[in-house]
Image (cartoon, rainbow, N blue to C red; front, side, top):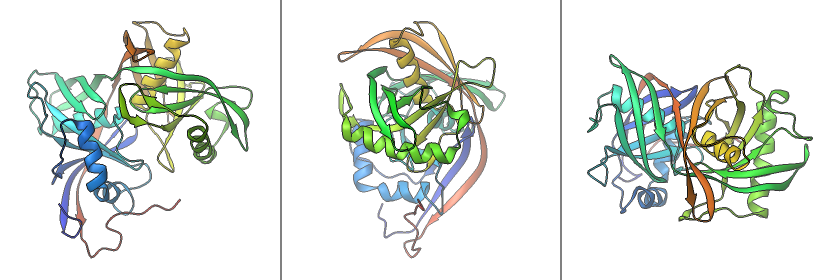
Length: 336
């Protein structure tokens, strides 16, 4: 595939807990690599113009996220997924996985070897998911995520408007800076999303300047990409609420699957959750993911957890998106 050629991308649009998901049915670029992690790097090097064209305006928007699907590298697995976002190609995306699997099953694009279970190759590793159907509709998807761990605690970061903040950094498929309620931050209910976005940009830049974060088992997974702001939940069944910043302007409308995994790892490390406990996480719009700590695990020198996440998605439309090399905005743009 070359950017000088004309393409029509056949897409299915959906949302997971309020956050958009776009699955590209085809055409898909041919990716080189012995793993989805290697294929992710190859895509970023050779085909990032496809990501920006599909995610950014005019084909997408600031909150857009999506995925391509491929045949698995290991015949024991059912599918391989590459996540594409406004922020790049994430190693793992929880809401994106729930949405992609819902589309793949409802549109009959894959035929799992075991009914009700899907083995998924992601750039972060193997993820095993299960799903529940009511006739032709997928009503629930749950997945056992990659190992999550608290990478750093009680870091100090200065925010110009809020002052000094104490931050933990936790990994749940991506690195998250977690800002809990504290003296200089009263919780997400006290601020606008515009304020959270503005502060997140500064904090993400500052924390990556002052500290470094590397996955102990994969040198290509590095840097803190997401900011998770905490708050008090509005629903009785929820244990916590959050607003996750990603990309340049986005606040996740869902509770964020990898963010929920990261927060469970944080709570586990601090003694607030134990193996077997459930964790109900509320998003900024009130949607819910239910997490659970399946087991404890070591990740390099870190004590971590194996988390599971459950949520649901809904298909809302079908798109045929034209990539014409004569279009001056075919590779997308952002207004920041």
